[in-house]
Length: 213
Image 1 (cartoon, rainbow, N blue to C red):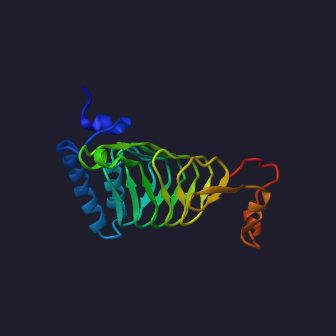
Image 2 (cartoon, helix red, strand yellow):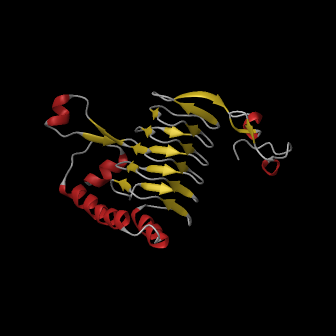
């Protein structure tokens, strides 16, 4: 018979029980220490995040304050960066690739509750749906990524978006609900903001055909 934690991680329906509360409180102890440690203690901050998360790369940077539910369901790749007020509700797995940038106030949510009022109120029915984010993704400020979403490699999500569906690789997507505006092209290697051009030292050789890398 599966434990409540096993059901939660597997995406099955579960109820809040003492087992989950104690697991969250253990994580809250680490979060309290992380969010109250002196900002200059970078090594200590990094070690606390590594202690919370299921798996990380060697290098990562998480700004204070930070919040997660359990931490044990969060996997991040090398060079992960999360700016302040990042929230990762990891009742189900959150898997993030390498070189991912999360701007301030980004929330990634895997938690769900029953829509039916009786199931939600009396039966306390909850569930989770995993979120996957590929390599080299940039998610803009105040964006919410909802349960079950996959964001492809090299995608950029505009500020203030609500991501309810999968976003393909190499795409710029914005809005509520978030929609693909366009895919990236050669112009994105010439102009960095509106009509402002990259300096010569940033010019990528034409023989380099990689997209988004």
